[in-house]
Length: 329
Image (tube, rainbow, N blue to C red):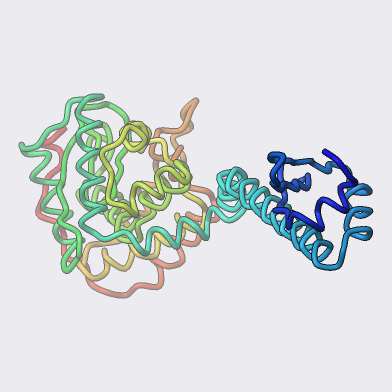
């Protein structure tokens, strides 16, 4: 190329644009009778010198190209921030869930329809059948159902009652109205009223959606998303269903279930002393390890004393349940 770049640029009206990765360079090209020419300015200092020494018309274009580079750099930085936030979002969500798991679980449970909850109960029942023998009919199931129906009048759930052929003193209420009573608990109950007390407590957990809340809290965000989108068929819930009998409730949840269970017993005119007697009996048996029912529903001294005071304050006349448990043992 003959002459200085300044002279040639003046003569040929060059094309000026940002170039290179992240527009870090300045590319100047032009053509004349002798051919096509181009040179690239990579260093900031050289680019600044060129902008100062170039003729006014070309200098403004150099500054404009440099401005487009700065704009592109800002876009890259902004895009990098967005990418970092996107990659960090799962960790942020997990952190929020862990720090606010109670509030998140409460928020989610309020938005899960009863139909969805019933489907989850069906899954729990199916998984329970794989673990133990479940009785769908028979005298024991009839007795449990007869008592339970008195405690669930007007409920939004469609309750289903089952008996597990297991010696454990245990019972649980799955989401959606599935209640399973272990045969060992029926044998331990001294009367139909004692059995009714346990059923009232389990029904209260179901009505207050404690089991559903516990599953959401223990399974985390994956369960939350699945429940809110209507997918309860995945393995995450199948695994939780197998561990529902081990789900421990908070002291507050137990207190709420005691109050609601007691209210339902009173409404059905069933003697609530049965509930108190049964829990006191289990707590005083002095076993090497507590029965499963007390492991998940601890009958603390404070809880029993509170229940005793509540029952003592009731002056209503109770209607005896016409069910003889001795024939079921």
